[in-house]
Image (cartoon, rainbow, N blue to C red; front, top):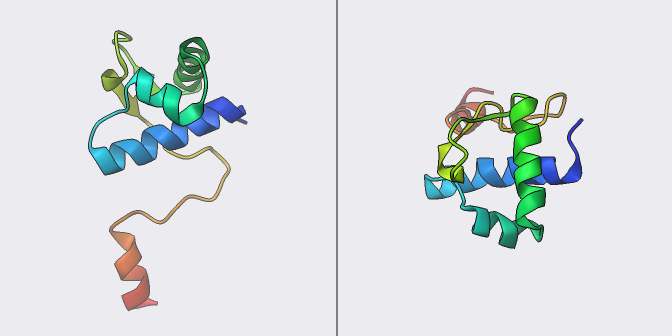
Length: 90
């Protein structure tokens, strides 16, 4: 189970990257989470350790790759392309 900061970071990374087509900067994560840089880095490292993200080059957040965008064991949103199919086929 993810901690509050880890869950928040994962949701921000997932949504921000989908909308902006890039990862948020550390400064943007500070603003969105209300947390300090040290807390954000610790949360990102925990997400990497738990295989939610990969972050090989830790010089900035642009190198983060999301492996799983949703906490394990939680209901997931329908994939973007499947929303219309749901309404037309069911």
